[in-house]
Length: 287
Image (cartoon, rainbow, N blue to C red; front, side, top):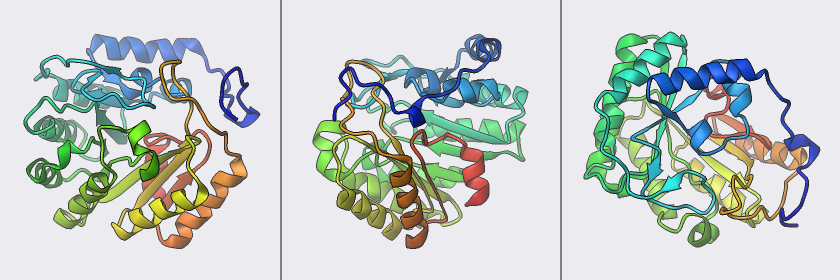
């Protein structure tokens, strides 16, 4: 059943959190001129994470050059890169005393390297101020450019995340400007170039995929030596985005988690409200 006028199942309803803590985090980010994917993508876990002084930094602006059907981030012509942004991310991470720093970005097809150099500068800046922190990046596909991917591998983030998002049969509707095989290759290339980097990917369910299709994607990822896997329920962020075709039960997510561990993933987070960077530090410690 689609989500028109449909109430969320009880397991998808989040508890409210103290507003003051959330506002403090937003004020800190605004002062530093930083964006987060938590806000730009309208993540349902924002209140929980912000109240714990945790956020996923969204670098290279908050306007994407692609317009995926599931994503709430604005599409259009991005602004020029802010050369101060890497240091700002590092300084805010230091102020928050983060032990696990997660950095993602909009897709920047307008840049020759897709933003690889900016990712590298941000990783380096964080490591200078927080040498003990783990650095996780969630990147676009860089158009499959091996030079850009090699630059990322040399920067050696502790965890490299690139989400497949959905099954290949739905790419034309969900990720029309992406390519399933290209995304798999990005993960494989990172692992080949720097085997010490843990690779990670994520899937959203409830967009019309079948169980067999999901299991095949899990097999594909495992064959690419992907270490960590996150599976969550797709929730429609705005009326402009794709509708939810089905809400999966917590038991179904648990079955996918068990299958992932049986296949050999080092860690699998599979639950309705799981997102790529949700409890990322815990996933990293366990995997």
